[in-house]
Length: 250
Image 1 (cartoon, one colour):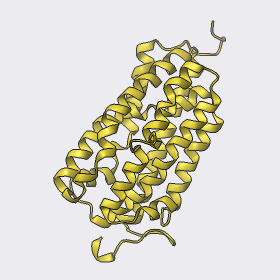
Image 2: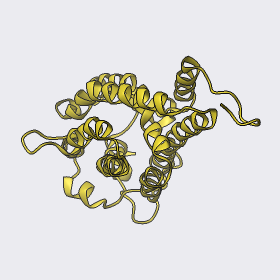
Image 3: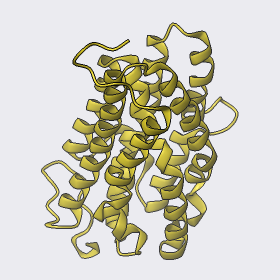
Image 4: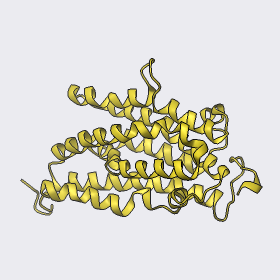
């Protein structure tokens, strides 16, 4: 039953289609920085800046997922979702996504300790990533889970990125294990999250909130790339305290 002023709930097909429409419009696969990467047009210094700043995001993903676990009283949900922590943190016997990303940072020519400490990351990167963790911590559990649904669109971007890095930046080819793992992890995670959101978004208001959560996550990812583009591509003005590649490499 719906309130008089509330729109009727979307059908399951239309609800799911809404997520895909948001991804097509807002996912960061269309960002100019990614387009330059995939065309082989970025310098080593620009790739260093990307790997360094992206590490801050990667390192906060398990913290975000731990918040989601702590907020759930559903044992079945926690059983599935905790896999994400292992995927990123590792299990003590095999490296997780964080360690794999540090190896990518090293392959660009930067020391891993710089990424671990966050030395030189852009202020906008810090603000955007912290805002994502805050979003997951303070919004409804439904919205928090829905914000992860960018993973619905990541497999295609990851495959394109791997092909481009191999073709245009061969010095990174031996350090792409992070992306190899995500080719299977991301679709599995997205399948569960989507099914969970569809099941638990029972009203139009909840469905709209879930769509808005995905838009918010897309905005966060886009904002991170906006900052990279401004600081390292055009006009190429890194802010005070930020990583500054050799000027000759820009």
